[in-house]
Image 1 (spheres, rainbow, N blue to C red):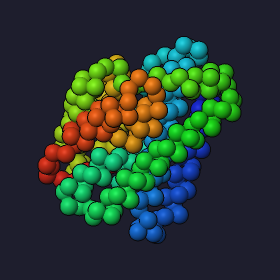
Image 2: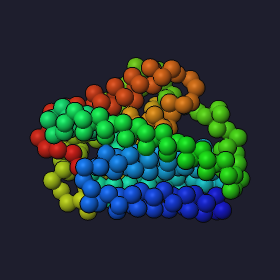
Image 3: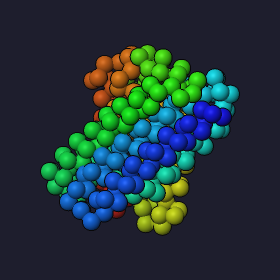
Amino acid sequence: MSGLNASLGYFVAAVTFVVSVRFLLKKRPRFSFISEFTSSFMLVACWLEVQTIVEVGEWAGGLGPDVTLTILFVVLLTHGIICGDASGNPSLAVQKFMKLEATTVTTLLDVAAQFIGAHLGLLAAKYYWSLELTDMHMIKNLMISECSTSLLVSVLQGFFTEFACALILHIIHLNLCRRSALIRVPLIAVLLTFLSHSAKGYTSAYMNPSLAYGLTFHCSGFTFAEYAVVYWLGSLTGKLIKCACPFRS
């Protein structure tokens, strides 16, 4: 339980940081790429802690899969509510560019901000683990140099898994894009949690290039190019389908 309390404090700190930055930028729309930075930072920083609870907490802390799935859902729901239009997803930034909804400069700034946010989210999580506030985090800190990759199948299978999951998300989002955010955001959070859990034996269905970069690219088992084919090209291919209405988070 102490591990969960520490994790809760970590989640609150990440959310507080994001909310503070978004509040400061509320009247500065030209710096919207900073919102993408905070969105990606929050997603990676919090998901890494969820991974810790899954990898260590389930066997060291006696936490069941129902607890970890609930935590992931709450993280995704909170992200959707707080970050709003800032998806923190390079695939969606590229999609907007392909649909002529964003300029080249805006797209490049958004994508760069998303990857920088993901990298800093990884660094923040590593620093937090190094504090070893609980036994769970002490074990995670010892395991940090030998992390387990999320890609548990071949590159080809991984590509089609990410492609299929991204396509499913895309199609369902199209059917929800005109619904109220009160309905859309929770349903998307449920869908993302379901896809991630269903694909945990394959790729974990990140469907987000910067999220995958922060969560698994630093783990051994595959080259950077192989990870890119699965998590970048697979996700992007699944989303780059002409749609009738824009995406909103």
